[in-house]
Length: 276
Image (tube, rainbow, N blue to C red):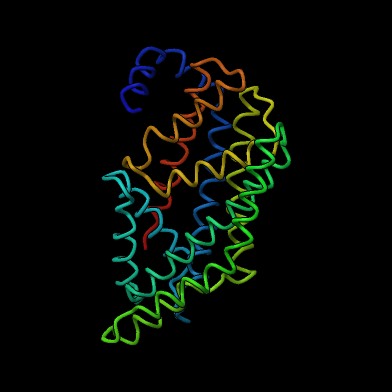
């Protein structure tokens, strides 16, 4: 992915720079939405912390941005460890921040399943799509039953020598998120949907809201795995492929993909520059 992307950038560089100059306002808007998204995700993380003592939102956003930058140094999101270490210095125990991370991931995937199923049903272009949508919706509906079962199994087979605080953390990790927390997660996906909807519309693609929702869910799922540092190449491939599938020329689709990457980097750099 990286080799193909680098080759395409070299071949289309003059055209890419021209397109980026023409879409500077689009870049500025998407960057602003991504900055807002970081603050929303940071607030969501704070809502999952079991402790009553939480850092300020601006400190959490700074920590989140630093972790996002560290993710570019290696695969599998090494920024998570850095984020946990920074939060420990801010007085949040490692166990609590780890639990909050797990709960946020579970809630985000739960929301992604619900939104993806709605998106597919909305599109409904074939029987296969509808069946897939129903399958995702059933899986989404099963999560409230699966989490208590998982909690029971973890606590049932946990060795008796495990410290009490670790046992309590494990119990909290499998609790269902509150309605307030899920609203925050929904706002996070709404911002991501808006980013893709506006970006592709500005490049002349007649993207629909269901398609933008689906793309947001797929991009988020790919970022969880992050086999490459910073998910480099994967985001570009998804955005370029979606653009070409909807009629964009190669140079246009590639320019939009790198516009998203540039906006993402700019947003985390600006927030990381905020003194903690």
